[in-house]
Length: 76
Image 1 (cartoon, rainbow, N blue to C red):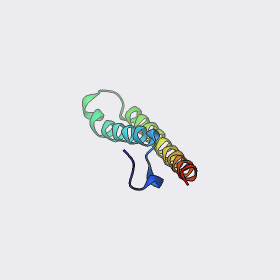
Image 2 (cartoon, rainbow, N blue to C red; image 1 turned 45 degrees about the vertical axis):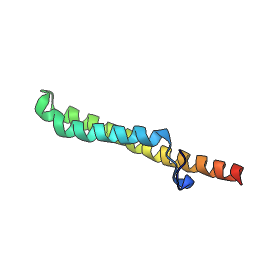
Image 3 (tube, helix red, strand yellow; image 1 turned 30 degrees about the horizontal axis):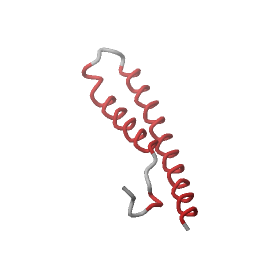
Image 4 (tube, rainbow, N blue to C red; image 1 turned 180 degrees about the horizontal axis):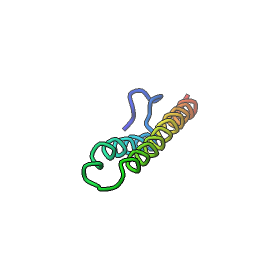
C-alpha cells in the first residue's frame, strides 16, 4: 500500500500522537462532569497529554520524512 506521495508517508508515532491528542481533548471536556476530583488535576493531566501528543506528532513527522528520503535515495 504505497503512498501517492512517498515524501509524506506516515510514521507510527504520528498515529500515537493523534490518539493522545484525542484522548486529552475528550478527557478535558468530558471528565469534569463525570469524576469528582479537582478540576485542576484534570486540566494538568490534559496539558501533559497534549504535550506528549505534540512531541509524538513532531517526532513522527520528522522520522517519517527521513524514512521517505532514505527510501527515495535507495530506489534511485
